[in-house]
Image (cartoon, rainbow, N blue to C red; front, side, top):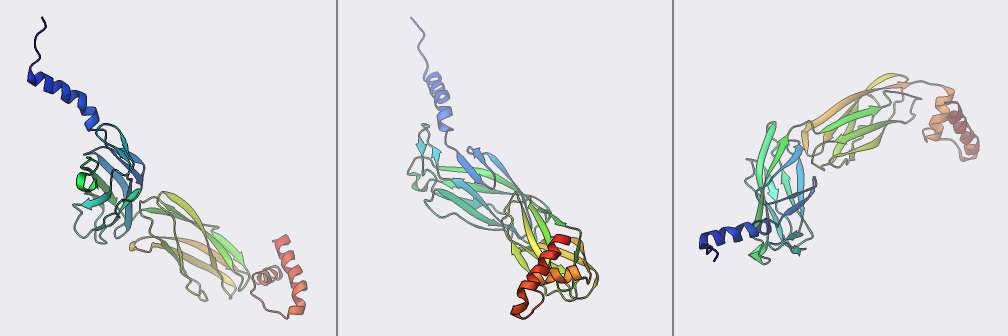
Amino acid sequence: MSNPISKAALFFAVALALAPLSNSMYVHVVNPSNATLYNGAQLFLGDVGPGQTFYVTISAATTNATGAINTLGWNEFMASGLPNGWAAENSALYTANLSVEITSSSSSRNGTYNFTLTAVNIGNYSKLGNLTILAHVNVTPNVFKLSAYPSQIIAGPGEPAVIHVTINNTGVSDNPFTITASGLPAFNNVTATVIALHHTSENFSYPVYEDTPGTWPVSLHVESARSPLVYKQTNVTLVVNASVLNDYSAIGQGAVAFPIIYEPAYAIMYLISLIFK
């Protein structure tokens, strides 16, 4: 006759059997990175500039304690325990993806900051309860890389020249950037607002021109629209030469106005400038 199993041993055996099931519910992070996390896990988000805003987004879908899929298991996503001066806006309710908006303090010093993110099953309707994760984000103004080409541009007086600006956003914020330039007396202080999403590199065309012949150093300034502490500068040189080919090219850019009856001739001049430049 086999020995009877004690109540304690039976409870332990059942607990072991149910342990994988009780831990089966998860939260699937879809932004700013992709990860599947279980209750009590830690999540490193990446870099953010002081004063910048970023989003953490999860899918509402999960599995319950029995492993069955629940497509709307999480109904709200919340942030708590934020550092001093930070702000958060919790997600909307009952959507397929739930996003928390978080804004770091503009006075935050460089370093890693922690806060808690909680996925909520409202009213415990699906018997999921809450799932919490500890989030870490690094505050630094160095959240993007900047380059511009060509380093030297040759153009005629009043002829628009294009600087190609590349912004490589290595941070987690999707805040816009502004591009401005200085160094040209006749420059009209154009401000271009552009977007390079987090973890992407984007190219933008920025026009400059000058009416007076000479060599002009142009300083390009790129800054986060949300944080003046997040910025970089690079320099290019604009060489303005008066020449027949440059004048012809300026015609094609609309820099010279003539009577309409001469338009066919000036169209030919512009084509000549393209051939010989």
